[in-house]
Image (tube, rainbow, N blue to C red; front, side, top):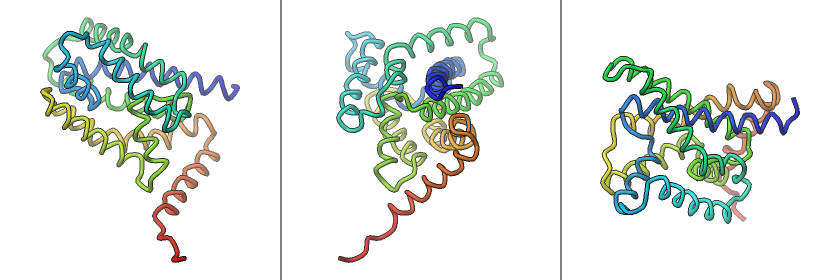
Length: 227
């Protein structure tokens, strides 16, 4: 398979899979992901604007900022997230609520756990496809490339900030939101290394790239010699 074809499929597949995972969270009713908590918190203060429109505005504002900071993060995946992801979420939410029984606790828990894994797999695929990521995902990725801090810890930090801000703006966060805020970063990093990178580069080259990543972080942390 050609390199570009593989990257396009990883990007579109990753974004679509991530959208279906949000439908699983919606069915489980244990809380939204951190960025959705922030977005709904902002929406509380703009009741005359529909959420879909406001969500697009928030992402477009972030898109402008990312363009000036690192426009390489912008691509097909970015625009699919901004303009099409909502429809995938709406479809998956409708399907799961239609075919699965309501108020079955063990099934809600199972769907929530599967949703976390599906979301992290999807995120890892379109991160490594590298044809653009969502504006929110780009924040932690850019910081990871420019600081000695690992992506998973930065993602936890941005998720906590979004969750706290959304709650302060008036949105309730469920236990699922807390789990997503603390757990997504490390799980995405895991699937990136064991699945997405080998899928794009092959196992040998993927291992080399992981080692290069680790070495880059070590160099960041080394104290500079005195002049």
